Image 1 (cartoon, rainbow, N blue to C red):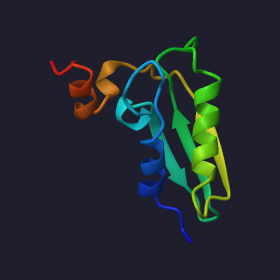
Image 2 (image 1 turned 30 degrees about the vertical axis):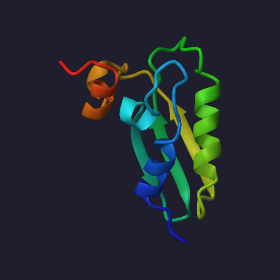
Image 3 (image 1 turned 30 degrees about the horizontal axis):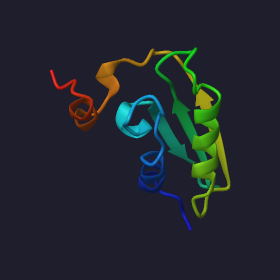
Image 4 (image 1 turned 90 degrees about the horizontal axis):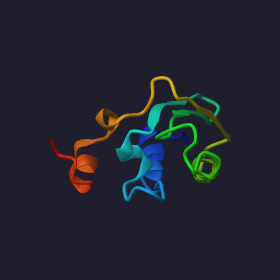
Length: 102
């Protein structure tokens, strides 16, 4: 079975930063998703800041949950802070949810 980007996004949408009641996909923490023909999923993600309290646990949760998708043979996750995350990376729905709809 081939893994789709939509499947990965669906799983990422179930992962929440415990300090913000919005999932990491809507927060804009995921900068890029690539899936190769061998079932390896490459994820480029960020956090709100390098010293974020979940800097160690959130990437592990992402790898674990994406690895559980049928057809995924491995997950390569890279954490970056370039460009730095900011509110502009959030979806409109996330901004509304957090009362940031300006």
